[in-house]
Image (tube, rainbow, N blue to C red; front, top):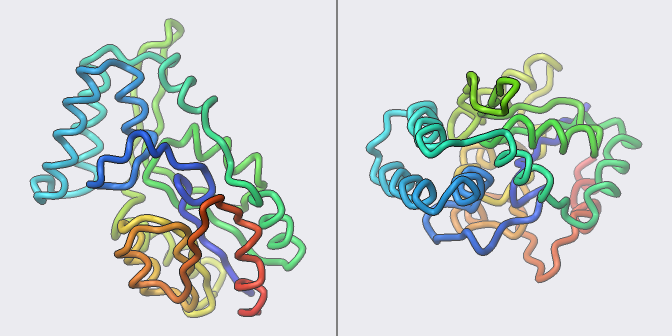
Length: 229
């Protein structure tokens, strides 16, 4: 049995290049802050500097601070819905997952982003398992009522990956990982095969294969995965 793990944003979903500040990979966190207000976006950008300067103890602490900022500037369900509705799959994603299903490969998504976005991606591609970091709950007016946070980024991604592999009795050396960000280096180093898909340099250096394309097409990695069966 094989398990193929995927990052979501920038890997399965198109990157929002306009939000790339060169610090961390652009994500729906930043897009949401920008949608709420320019002031929210500016304050959220400060948290990225704090993250890179290791001012946060953990990813959970960073998320809590960012959620605080979102709420402070009046986040509403409509803001998140606009981000979710604007998400676009990379070309070739459906073909790739059809191939994986036909090959009896277990598929899993592990994202440091929003559950609502992971749910949409999982349903569209019929992914077996999906882990995500932040779920917002809204009241009937659409205001934030509560939220749930899971540490599914950086080293936390590896924890969830290892747990799922154990559930299937599969060694990580028999697993495949596909991602694009430097926050995925922990995963790339632990699996038997890792594919850096239009990735940041840190992940390219840690991965078995690197695919760079001007027009991303996930179907192009099918031959790489097939060769590992």
